[in-house]
Image (cartoon, rainbow, N blue to C red; front, side):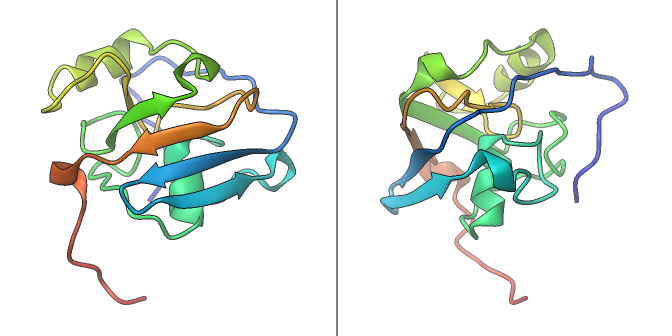
Length: 135
């Protein structure tokens, strides 16, 4: 879907400059992220965890299309949390509506790692779409 949310402040992020990896749990699938290939999809901010996941066919629910207008793309960053800039007030407002919130919870559509370290992110059980449409 892609796009922007006209009600949110525009988010400026520094894209990564070197390759890094993201391991998605519980499927234990590791993706090598090449910053020269960003964006991988049209979902979320360019270089966001949602962008990377969607570009590699890893399903993270995102009802609003990745524009920070819901909390369905909630993830928990298990390792590498400090490589992601702090959440904006708009993101924090949306996170407040997410079940199972933890200290390292983020919206995957807004979380853009800087590439300084590898990440491990967990897609919460309640957030996994077990039904998949065919392409």
